[in-house]
Length: 187
Figure 1 (cartoon, rainbow, N blue to C red):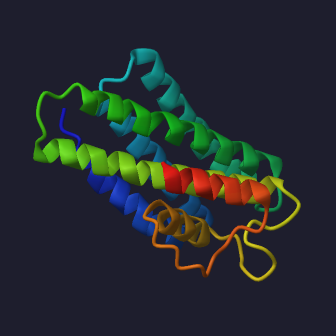
Figure 2 (figure 1 turned 120 degrees about the vertical axis):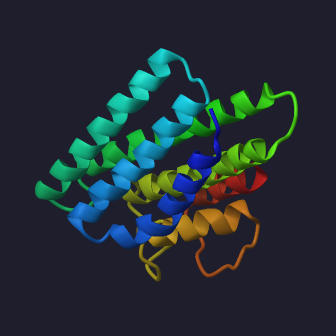
């Protein structure tokens, strides 16, 4: 199956998710878009049935967590932390499955390039989610007191790091954050 639709949906998620993060409906929509992108990538990459079913179950669970977590307290409550951890797990598996499929293609086509770009974007989204998770669980804010740990800031920092642009306006202040940023840049 072609991977180009995964690229297009990944681009949509990357662009719209930071803007939707402010409302409850937007968070659920973003969760479903992100999860849908991952499931689509798994389906089109020929993932094993058990991986596909696990991915679909995670998306349903993530949508429920997204709805319930905002009703029970602060934005960084335990349910939200669990949800972000599950997103990290889903986004860790998805690009790996896509890349494995791409390795089995005998020649490079436009769809192969689309698949590689989709995996690249999913890696950036994965690291943005990991940065957000770290920011939620550590006592020191990820970017320090001067910057908010918003979805937009985590995604912006992730893609600036992944592309090695290094604007320097967002910088992790803890050793964990710095180590993760180095890992993403090297990847």
